[in-house]
Amino acid sequence: MSDHLTPEKIYSRILNKELEKKDALKLFESLIHNSDNEEIRYTALEFIGKIAFEDKKTFEVIENCLISDESPHVRFEAAKLLIQIFPKREIEPLLWAIQNEKSIYFFKNLIDLLETYDTSPFKQIRGNTLKKIENHYNLKSADSKFVLDIDYLDYMKFKTEFYDFLDKFELSDQAKQALIKQNTEIGYKGLGRVKTSKNGFITSLSLIDLTEIPDSICRLTKLESLEISFCNLKKYPDPCPNLLSLKKLVLNNNRLDSLPSWVMEFASSNKYVHKYILRGVRKSEVHILGLLEILTGQICKKMQEDENIGPNGAIYYEVNNEGHITKIIYLSTESRIGVFPKELCRLEFLEELTLADQNIRLIPETIGRLKRLKVLNLRLNKIEYLPESIKKLKNLELFYLKSDIKETK
Image 1 (tube, rainbow, N blue to C red):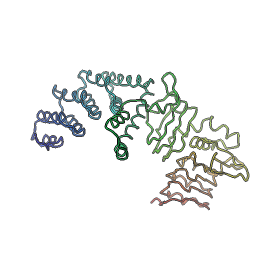
Image 2 (spheres, rainbow, N blue to C red):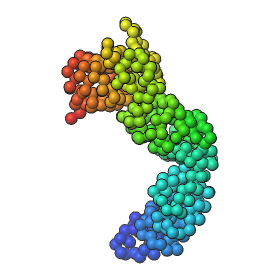
Image 3 (cartoon, rainbow, N blue to C red):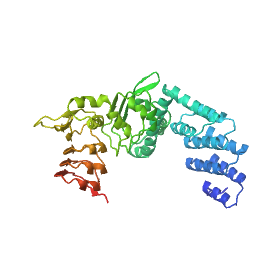
Image 4 (cartoon, one colour):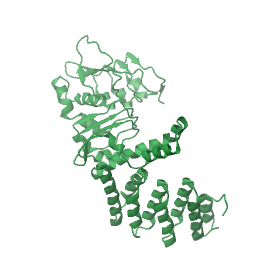
C-alpha cells in the first residue's frame, strides 16, 4: 500500500468506481491499524460509515475501534456507527465500552446522541451510561448530566489552551500525561461548582469563568441558589421553568448580549419587588429594580436629596410623585452588570441613566423609547456600535461614551 494513501483518496476511488467497497474496507482497516495519527483513524472510520453495509466484517472493524482505540474521539465515532448501522445487533460491545470508559468526551457525546433514539435497546444503553455518571458524581440523573456538561466545557477549554500552556512551561512526559488525564477523564472538577446538594439533587451552584451555560441547567428541579459570575457569555439558556422556583439568583460580573425571559420572570417575583412597592415605586416598574439587583448582587437604594454617590455599593434610583422611576445610577466596578437590559427601555419617565464601566457591549435598539431621557452616561464600557434609534432621543442633553464606536447602518 502506498505511503501516500489517505482515507480521502480511498473514498474518492470508491466514488469513481475504481475500488470495490469490500476492498476499500480492508484499506481503511489497515490505515486504522497502522496509523499513530488520531485524525487519520477517525477519518477512515467516518468513511467506513459512509460505505458500510450490515455485514460481519464491517461490524468487527468498528467494534475493534470501540474496544481498543486509544482516542476517545475514535471510540465515540465507533459507538455512533454501531448505533446507526447495526441497530439490531447485540449491544454487548457498547455496554462493555460504557463500563470501561473514562473519557469526558465519550460520555458527553454518547448521552447526547442517545437522546435522539427511542427504541428499547438504546434506552438501555443510555440508562447504563447515565447510571455510571450517577454513581460517579453521587447525584441523580439530570443533576449528574449537568455536572458532566460542565466537565465537558472545561475539557474543551483545556484542549484549546493545552499547547499554549506547554509552550510556556517545561513539563516532563509524566507530568504531561498526568495533566491530560486530569482534564480529559471523568473526575470531580465539575463538582467544584456545586456548593450544596441534598439527596442526590444539586441545591446550590456557583458557576464562574465559563463561556457557556449548558441547557441542562434547566433540568435542576431542586436548585435553590444560583450564582453565575465572571463569565463571558453570549446568552443564558431559555426557557428554564424549573429555575423560577429559585430562592436566590445572582448574575453579576458577566459579559453578555441579552437576557432570557425566565430571568425577567424571576425578577418580577415578590421576593424582589415587594420592598420596592413599599418604598413608593409603581408596581409596573418594580421588576426593573429586581432585575438590577439580580445582575449586581447589590440592593437598589432610593436616593436622598444631595446624596453623594460613590463608586461602590448600591444601585441608586429616584422616583417622581407618581412613583415612576426617573433616575438610575450605578457606578460600582466590584460587581458589574455586564449587559444593558432592554427592560430599562420601558421606563418611559426615565430622565437620567448612568451605567459607567459595566462591561456593556450592546445598546438595545429599544433605547429610542426613552423619550424623556436627558442624561445617558455609558462611559468606559465596551460598546462599539450605536443603534440608529438613539437619534430619537430628542431630549438628550448629555451623552457620555468614551469608546471606539460606530453608528449602525
